[in-house]
Amino acid sequence: MINFQNVSKKYNDQFVLNNFDVSIEDGEFFVLVGPSGSGKTTTLKMINRLIEPTDGDIYFNDKRLIDYNLKELRLTIGYVLQQIALFPNLTVAENIELIPEMRHWSKAKRRERTEELLRKVSLPPEEYLHRKPAELSGGEQQRIGILRAIAAKPDIILMDEPFSALDPISRGQLQLLIKELHKELASTVVFVTHDMNEALLLGDRICVMKDGKIVQTDTPEAIKSHPANKFVAQFFQHEHANLENYCAEDVLESGFIEDGQVDSETTVNLDTDLPTVIRLLIEGETVVLIDEKVPIGEITDRTILRFLETKIEKGDQ
Image 1 (cartoon, helix red, strand yellow):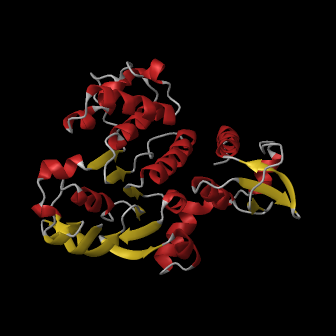
Image 2: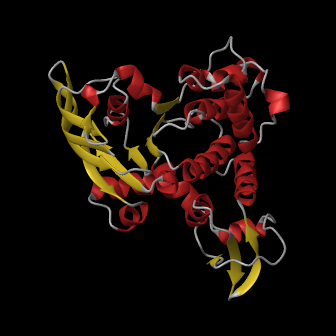
């Protein structure tokens, strides 16, 4: 769907992106990860032509981006920033309905879509439609920012470190939410983060970048098992260490396992690390904790969020 072919970007004869080649598949959740200055955001902004390449070509559905009408191109792309950037003078409904209105949806269709989306993110329309952004928490504002980006069912959703300014609990909730929405919409998501843990949890594939170049592009499992070099291995270990300190048994001992018998083929053992459990949840699996093949109970996204909240309150993370 999106192809970068020998793409470079220079500022004052210095490469920000150097001979970048990558293909992003239709419907893929593709994550760009790397330290600050690695070229992630530059790459993302080239897709909606906020930045133009110095050399090379970018293709969308086998047509060069440069050959698209710019306004029409951007109307097919949703964009979520770290800085939430809601219009403060508009209501929640008016913010969400901006792009559908520009695409000439009827008023009734716009409102139906807005109410549907608000319910999906547990914000009751009757309470939130007419609120202004200043009346919302940071997590609520970012939910509205995500809904605005997806309201018109775009082909591509660009997300530039959208959760990095949020507290860990809101961040975890929104990670689960965006993965669920991605499965439902089947849009192509290109997601920028400097957090390898977030990349491993969300990505179908991950592109690890350094100094404007690709270091490794592969699935989360392959990168975890077979890092391309010492940089990738160290970056993974540094970013992933906190959650890997915990396992399913820690969650059990905290008393947050859901009681009751659950029929599921997806089971985890007491020593299964927490990142593995979270990834199964993000993939939509029903996860059952077992001890020597005996079911103990279900681990849910609520289970994990409550567990992490206790660790944050104790200062363990």
